[in-house]
Image 1 (cartoon, rainbow, N blue to C red):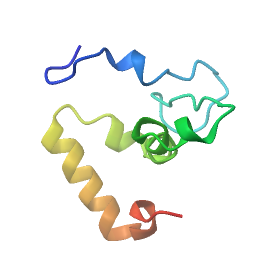
Image 2 (tube, rainbow, N blue to C red):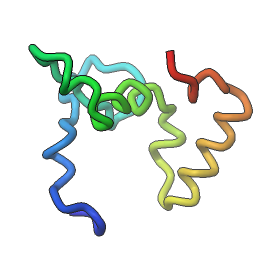
Image 3 (cartoon, rainbow, N blue to C red):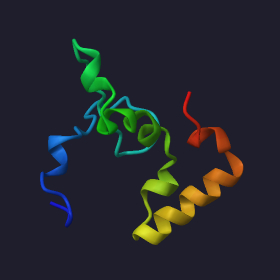
Image 4 (cartoon, rainbow, N blue to C red):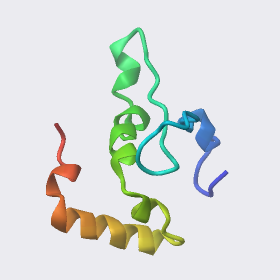
Length: 84
């Protein structure tokens, strides 16, 4: 469990185990819900963006390295950070 979190990450996210997955190696599975309420939770809204990150951002060893990778993306791919 990461510090600052009251529940383990697997409470909120599930790794995609499909070996045919394109993109980076840490893709998350997006769950389907009968009610709309759950699909608007933060943990569900960020999955699509996380899954679109390049492997180079995911491979960063430090938080600052990850932030720098996101900053480089922001400069070249601004629509990545826009809500659709």
